Amino acid sequence: MQPGISPMAWVHPDAVIHEQACVCPHVYIGASARVFEGCTIYPGCFVGNGASVGEHTVLHPNVVVYDGCSIGRHCIIHAGVVIGSDGFGFAWDGQRHVKVPQRGVVITGDHVEIGSNCTIDRAALTCTRIGSDVKMDNLVQIGHNVVVGDHTIIVAQTGISGSARIGSGVVLAGQCGVAGHITIGDGVTAAGRTGIAADIPPGKVISGFPSMDHTHWLRVQKVYKDLPELLKRVRDLERKVKDLAKD
Image 1 (cartoon, rainbow, N blue to C red):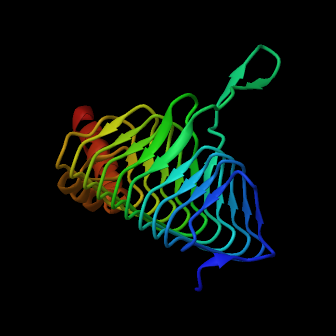
Image 2 (tube, rainbow, N blue to C red):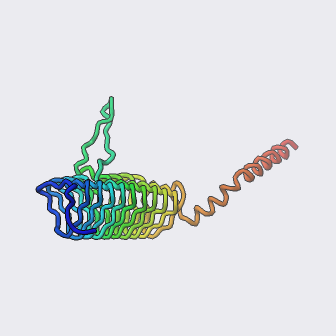
Image 3 (tube, rainbow, N blue to C red):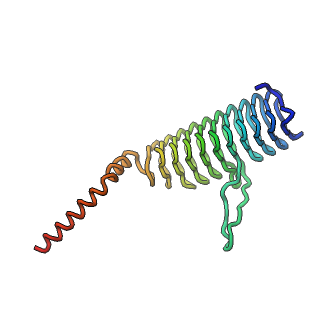
């Protein structure tokens, strides 16, 4: 892509666009936004007021970066990603759910790659933070006030609830679910479809719902498939015990 701003893009006069950035047609860049050297912003992207896009970062088509959010350097943000939408915060007033204002932002580190159609919610007050060298697959949901440590991998259809803390070097395989306000230690690996509802110490390998040590989960699964036969054997033994008691 050649550097420059397409005449079919809309750029606010107060935005700062580096001369070596490429802004494609049908891009919107708001007031006080900053786009740094070597960035490529593909058609249909929205960069809100006060947002920033770091050096040599690529926003693929239809990426949304809400007001005040910051994307690091050398990042790749794939199509349809939404960064900075409101966190899911509501309070019941006795009659209805009242929206709690979400005033924070999202900040990502450098060398982050975010797969298509991921969503990262802005914090309620401070920031949702994605560390450097984090890699996300498609269709990942990050809730408000979440912190994700450096070098973490998050695979497709994983959801992380608000205010969870994910350590560095963590691997969350596909369809993992992480409850809010818990901490996952550095170096944890969670197998696919693990449900994590409590704090996990560093270095653990976990599986299952609720999450447990992976080796223990394998033993549980072995028993699980044999449950119908085990139930039949237990009932047979109960009948025999009753017959013996009658004699």
